Length: 79
Image (cartoon, rainbow, N blue to C red):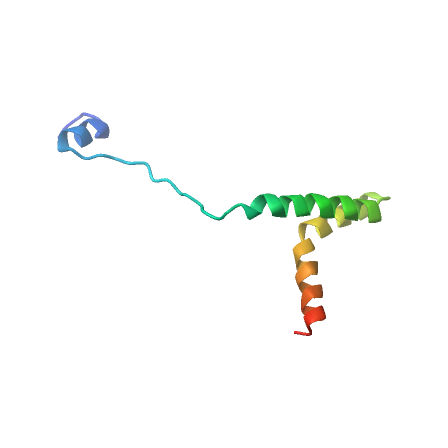
């Protein structure tokens, strides 16, 4: 039994460990969604300002604003 570390054994055997990289292409829409979230948050805070629970409701609406968008789009298209 060899008491040396795994990296020593790997070098002796000629094995090369490579770190895997995850490359996400066409993933730039996250910033756009974040700007939409900030805009929705500002809008809903303006509409629902007042008590603590109205502010909580405004934050929740800002998180799920794409659901409202898709719903009203489907109603508009009569789907």
